[in-house]
Image (cartoon, rainbow, N blue to C red):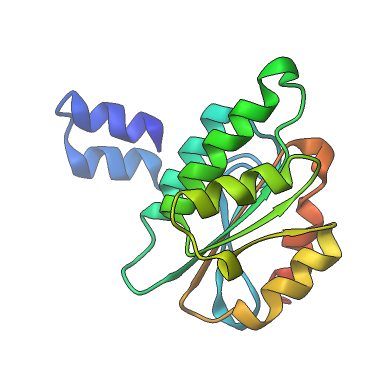
Length: 170
């Protein structure tokens, strides 16, 4: 998708770009769009996370159709060292401005949630859970055809388990 945006910026022909991208499938767990239970749309970006990729993923969620319930399931960004606290604060703030609901998991989840609330998200719309099973339980009543769920976190957070459990059964 980034390549398409660059091509458009350089005034390449839109239909030619679309033709080139037809049939493109991103690598597993990297911005894969899958159908979730009850017709929800799930953006599976659970393979890995960095501050830049978190920002990009939240911007994708922001593009959800008008009237959508935008849910961000965010796990820790690992291996950030001394920058971890600040990076999670920044992502929480962006998530609070982008998503309707933020569900955070991991060591830095409280920081993400607090930053989302400071950015304007209501207290009951941003919360910390302990792991994948609690994420799935929290998502259950939210999954409708109007729901867009972003699942994003570092590989070590194993958030692919969330996607596997909320996918529409085939």
